[in-house]
Length: 408
Image (cartoon, rainbow, N blue to C red; front, side, top):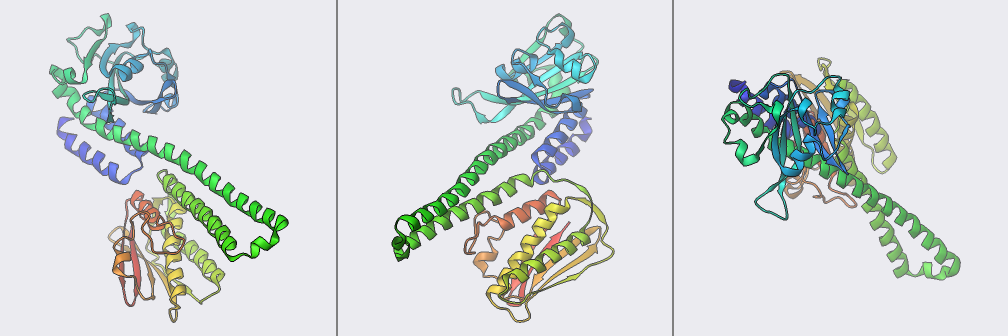
């Protein structure tokens, strides 16, 4: 396995950039199992009063709670690496064996250092979770763990004779697992907060409407006052824009879990074009044509059609709004697909006036927008969707129009 470690590490780093945290961590677990020559393995994280299996090569283990007085609990609480023979270790949690329908023999339990330093002791790294690897044969023949577990601090384990040969490569992977766990935790927390904020802002809009009705019933003349009218409109608009921002942010968090299936990109483009035509007609302020030019050689690919349709629609929607705003003559949005060297290229082009440099240079930066009432998340979400699919997106703009080029 040693000679393959560079390939493993390269794969982990690539996955950290383009895959959702969950998929990256599953890959890390598989790689750790292979590097250690283990028969199985799991990743556990703290959840309320328990540790919980969040990833495992045995599906029935995922979601199982483990008490803190277990081997995993001791590993997380004390930040010790524990190597033990499970049948003679009283801390071994029998629920694990019930779930895997097999008796655990040799167990290596490794704390996953958190990316945060513990507040009470800057020199000590708090555990973010636990990596456990299972072996049918004794990994360290010179250690008779049937008589008692062997425990090491994170510093001491690196001085052991077996570390360089067996464990060093696994320890190189731990920071990526820790990073993935932090992303999952932050996403879950932010999702809950933003979801609640969205609900509060929607409620605020409703109460503003109630307030307006009450004023109309009690003192209708006040609603004719220009200052009061402006204040009510501004308050309602602020709540509406805030809830819109929350909804867009929730979309940004959800796209980390794509639902992949065999997909025709040409069909995604056709459906997107139909949606955009309806959107353009609904504006009813300036005629905009939507034209498609599709390469029949584009093959089926494993993609999430709904996410891509959302991204493609956003690109076209921006084009339609720009063409309408500037009343471009013969306003047209053209979507083309082309298969090139096993990559599918899709162009989204308009014949508008192009974009100023200050806008073009910040297209994919969150919360950067010049659009009235915009949130600055639309193109950020588009890029993230394309990134997750292993693709790329770039923009070309000039006096004759703007073109977004997607390659997947």
